[in-house]
Image (cartoon, rainbow, N blue to C red; front, top):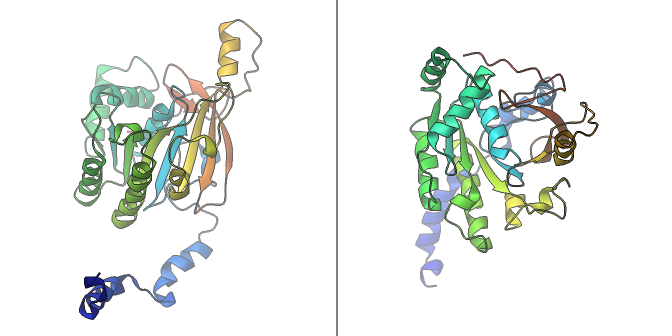
Length: 298
């Protein structure tokens, strides 16, 4: 307590914090951009054109990708990464999949087939080698190591997007709500300090029926996760349609295979649901029921 009353210490601390004080006219560039962007969404885009004027992945933000186990969170986010590799650098820390499995799925999505040629595999891997990094850990990794990896990737490798898959693999007990909140708070701080966009994969509670579409309040763990993350995306497979297909019942092909719900977008106006269809051969989520594979140019 004596140190806190020390005027010299307070003066030193104040001088350190003064670097974060800005005047309104220092903000002209950013404010002017808000009013003169001709309707263009700030940030990197998702693969589907119908999202382009509604959703952006902005610098210095954290996006939570949530859903029930087995509903395709990692698969859909991998497609977002593969589509964006042409424009930005990505790092995928998937502690639930071997690096070879992660890369194989992205090759399949890029090729648009589950039987890509050896020539395409080599071409894709060579093309991605200066655009994509994979964190080769398939065990639980303590969150301080994750934060260190984030800082190195953003500062030294100039990575633009970092995927952490998933929160449950970051060494925090599921009943440690304070620890979860602190870790997500640190991720938000790291994103702002480095300017990268961090994607955190997480689970939602399984409801009474798996066919019920969850909302952001169904997200597991600390409530602060919802408050702290800038964007929340929820992925939900249409299990009812899948059951009808398996049992030979009538299926309306215009009924979506997957719902991508934008449940929160702090710096964007849009919140709502996008319908997607799944192409099993390519493992791509496509924007309409024609099920045509999207082109990935490498």
